[in-house]
Length: 150
Image 1: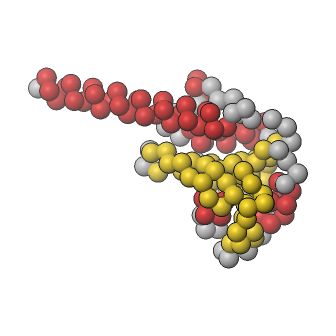
Image 2: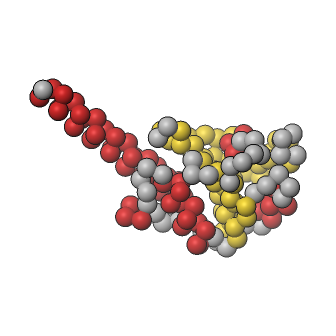
Image 3: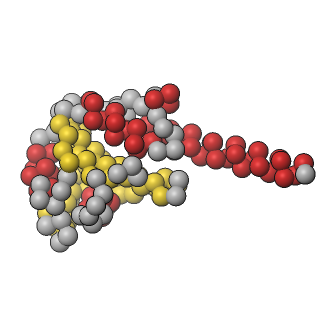
């Protein structure tokens, strides 16, 4: 019986530590543009918290669709920092507008990005062209957040 209780406590501790690590990784990723505070962040869905904070602080916010992504990416070139989120599970920062690849699904030249995808509670780092990170144009909500400075 002691072993079962000890194992359960150990697993709970490991899960809490994993959530703290996920928060710290994303906190560093979005800084200095956004300042994440643990008390205002859902540690289980930190990208949801980032979206909420970004919506309040970004100079411009655009809901991306297949129809407007080309204009949105052209506009984004005028900004210093650009993040794109997909629902509550993906965040990507555009890092190079000169390194592009044509996306047949999006019908646009997609720039290079770096980001994180959360699947089954695990945060995976990724670096690729944004069309591959944000996926196919379908039902998911995609938001682009743009900042002139920071």
